[in-house]
Image (tube, rainbow, N blue to C red):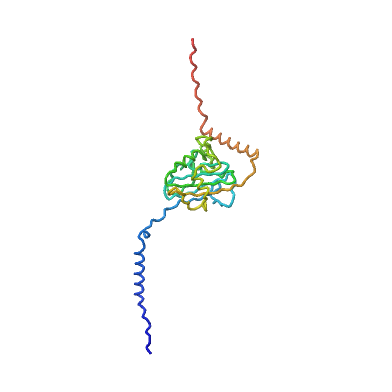
Length: 273
């Protein structure tokens, strides 16, 4: 009865060569465009903090005290135009950055690449925004490689947050826009369609990489929802203390800058004959 001969196996070196040939063939068949795809562009990142000085991260599930100081650490991979605004049903839209009334080390666009802590510093004083007294406020951050003039124009008509009257304050105050309070947009919705888009599609996290802004090439955005603890109305004693502190600041400004010069009276016309 004939015996069957088992098949011979190729030498190990032959199998390795065959595998290498197959791998090279697959590489050759892969479209060249996939081998040289550009790396995705770097993404701006954000981190919100609170406190005085603002160093604690914001817990989205927790409520902050009314007036709690806030800052934004922003890292930009390239020079960008940055817009920061807050909106709620009590105050409407408030321009945080840029702001006509902000006096700081970097108060204008575009911001250079690198790390920035907004709203910035005035000399040695680290500046802070603050939480409104509204129960819920949406903060919006937009970073764009090009200016957004329509958004800028609308923010100029909103209430401004700054330190123009009290440059020594760490926590910024709120001011009427130069265009007048009569031109301030209503509070029922954000003052610009881009802000509305961001407010209606809040980002999953207020910290970390920003998200692509729909319909604006190369622009990014992030949102922060701030819940505020509702406190009892201020007592007469609280109001007196606040007036006392404001009066002290006004007196300090008067000492620093002196009284306004009083123009000399005009000479009397000669008496008629």
